[in-house]
Image 1 (cartoon, rainbow, N blue to C red):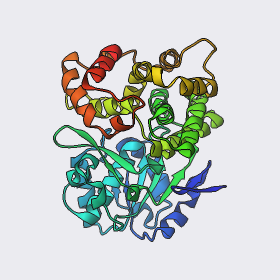
Image 2 (image 1 turned 135 degrees about the vertical axis):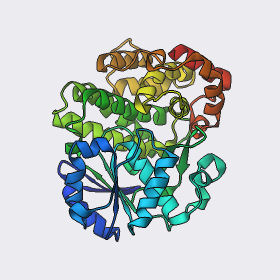
Image 3 (image 1 turned 90 degrees about the vertical axis):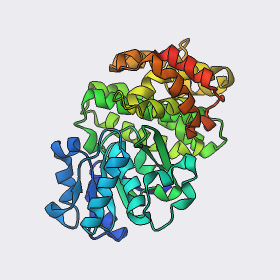
Image 4 (image 1 turned 90 degrees about the horizontal axis):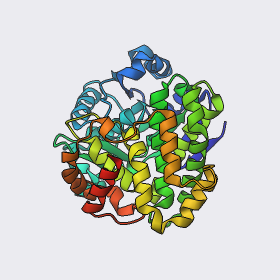
Length: 376
């Protein structure tokens, strides 16, 4: 199979997990901690991975990752890492275990508290090469965190912030579409919309980066043409392959920056009052943000429509609304349990999210409030 060395080293193919022992050895690990979640354990996937690890069934496993990774859970993982003398981390699951693993890799080797390393507080320069090595194995096709340089974390104060550094990139990524074959339709849909949103937002961002832009466009093409098939028939190998590739490519395009969809989704996802899935939030918010950016991104929208096979005469935002409906996404934020009285604080906090800086059109708090109202 091909070995890709863009940003990091990636094994990508059906059966790719067979190379995990070589990757562990290449990273110098002899006692890695497996960071995952209970869903992956219950699905039997973690047992397949521990069988390939140096200690086999005796591998130390942290499976308490919540659906939105938290500062508290990270502290627990770090405590286990230190108590069991681990020398690296294998992250297995969706974006939550992978992001928690990155955060744990920082704290286990740098000390302090996670807030010290948050990007908006100037934390990036504090992360050094002594970070523990991480190998990432995705079991969903959405975040692309296996090739991402950030970890999106929910902090004790209720804020959802990102820890970012090139040093957070996993040393190796093992992308095996076989691991996604049993993913339920709703989770396939929600994570897939995350990947599609990555491609679209990166392609239209205000950052000029032609290689990343080309990757973002291909991400959008693959996801738009494959997601519905993957939802309807989870055993379709081509669709599963294409969605995992789209997921990976979307995160590769992060070098170009995301936008307002993610600023709002990060902020809403950090709310304590309700649990909101990140990919589902992206799906619901995307049409309104596309309308907000449309006036200054007409050429980019036309190119996206062509690559995504949008029917002639249909706008990009309406295409996304139709896709959302067909794959079972909520029609609006209200259906997800979001309350209008939260809009003022969410709008202000979203302005501070790093993705606001790279949105195609610079939003104000009032703009964010209008987008939320439209998506409500």
